Image (cartoon, rainbow, N blue to C red; front, side):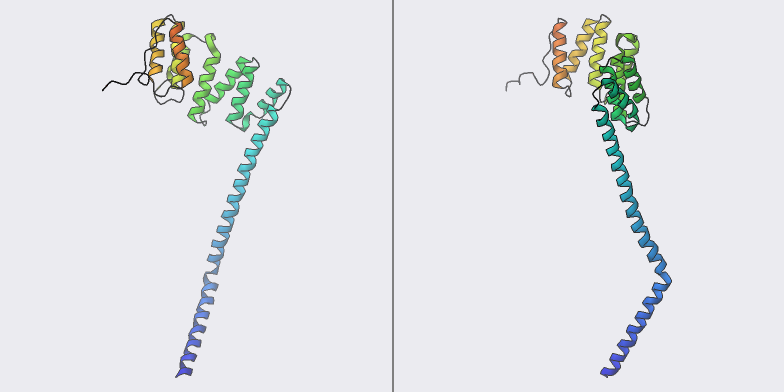
Length: 223
């Protein structure tokens, strides 16, 4: 009986082995393709990661190389040559143009950033803000007011800074009371920074007004 069972087990094992190899011969190409796909996909991902890292390093090297130039003219030339490497380089170029007194070129660079629909809105708004600031009184008051009003909309990243500029425009147009009111509104905003709060307070005092206590400055009500 034991010999019969052993014989049956051997036959069964042989059948299983034959079935396994038959399945491998029939479907092995599918397994091979799957393995190739997995390995190929992993290799491509690694290749793409290496490309991105190399590109980022190249951008950083280009910026550092430009900023390390001793001659200011060379800095401008290098930054201008590297401006296609990204928004950071373009902002650096505009800042350097402004620092070196080429206001028109700086405005043009900021305007180009603001017009780039592929750039994140926060960077386009920043570029617009800086461009309008540089334009100064060379741009009609109504145009500057319209630009800052667009930036001062609720939710804007630079709304408080734009509101400060609107207060200055009100003052420029002779509306001192309106300027004081706008500055006081700034002080009441919960998101106002200490630097902006200080500037607004000093401006109100300089204009002959009295800064009203903000909610955070008011004394607690006695119980």
